[in-house]
Length: 314
Figure 1 (tube, helix red, strand yellow):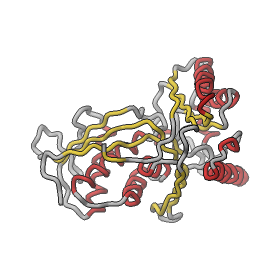
Figure 2 (tube, helix red, strand yellow):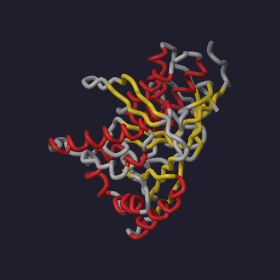
Figure 3 (tube, one colour):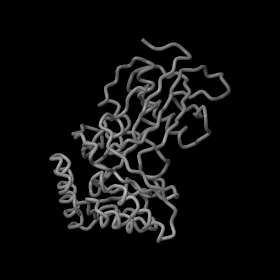
């Protein structure tokens, strides 16, 4: 059954950190930082603010954010196709604490929120697995998509040739593990950050990254977080992205020196994240901010826990 015009749902979606060191486009970890996406059926004639699941223009109800509008319209089109439903007009509004273009999965909160909201309104009955697949297709990679929808530490897999989402193995992460995020004020769009990556990678750089990613997954699976110490080394994307973010590499090093187990560039940046035990998290955050300040960069820090639930109706 489809909800009538005027009906609305709100979906709470966690932010996420992706790659987690060397797990490029594969590893994601949901964090307790949230956006709430409210989706409501409406009539196309209402003030030009209607969003359709096809090529029609999309405008958020509260802010004329072109990027969010485009993501919402594309996500809606994908949902209506997958659900076999006739496109309908709707409005959406995003509110919350996940910063835009900071490597914390803000785009996934919009895409997943819209898809899950339309799923609830229309009664289409898509599963979480289905939603991860749709978000992955929109994003182009499954790391943030799986973490934002499913929660926890996620190891996601796509079909190697087609890139189609296949499955995720996830692990819960206890609250005693602190995720210390330091975010410079500058935004960094994923598309721009991907443009600096090389087309060809040295063979043994790939081998070293595979070794590191496998070890990080094993540590999370075993809940033996002390084994993460210095295990986040990456040779696939961080060497090309970190130098473009002033103070980022020193901030990670400072966090580790202050007691964190490991640290990495969160997604494509500009945020960096360190994994620490909760009693020492404040000292790690202070050290990371001091490193950014020494580089002349204003930044903010958050001490977060993992979100183990993923998206849900608010």
